[in-house]
Image (cartoon, rainbow, N blue to C red):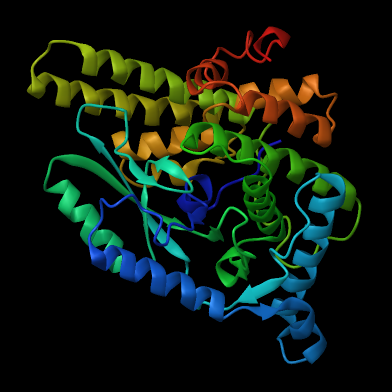
Length: 368
């Protein structure tokens, strides 16, 4: 059910969560300032989509994207049981490739990312900036302290339902399927969000994205494809589960290495070896099992380190758990959301145990 990812930001952090003035006092005043001003600028630039379309002043390409977004939103509400509110009824032209940039950091010998805590979203493994240079500067300061770091561009923007989130032009830079994927993912965050549990939240939203995209595609076939549609290869069946298994294997090896009593020099050497083996084993999947289709190529385009693996895991981890839950729901989205909400009410430890069980035993009735 997965969709292809042409850029690393579409594999990883697709959301710029609204953290304006909600941080728990661990940031400098300059951080608050850029967050407040960036958010307010974005909100103040919103234009109603229906007014834009009626004006006749938008170019055909943008008009197509806006009209399609209206269709996607209606589908999400009516067929995926996602929230019907003012989000994605307005549009912002940023003129950028990303709306925010998120900094992720992890110790050199740990898979546990550094956390930043906010009153609304809880503790999350990233800190967002509205300026790419500011994000790079902050990442550099963490590099100097010995952290592995990764800066992830965010394509969409979410306030978790606190404001009417706008469509932004960054969401239009790929194809029609990817626009649908972005919208389903962000609307899922408004449907269900567990404060301080990024792994659960992203796995849930990612599954809704993938399941929704599969249903969206089926609803449009054999309709004629629109501009930008079908320009990328689709993920092979079970590719997400196979990639997740490969990812967890690499994380398990690194976890065992970091828990050992070997020297730091040996640990660095072994860390490099494990990460390069992960890269090589992925290529074997591409060539021997996926017929050359390379849906996660952008994951391996940059540096692999503890920070990037932590972010990848937040999005790719838990795919089997939610897939099994969807089966238990009889492939019905409303029932799936109900079962997911029941999982959300578990303790964080119990949720984590369920989310990370092997695929063959996850999501049993006894877990509810």
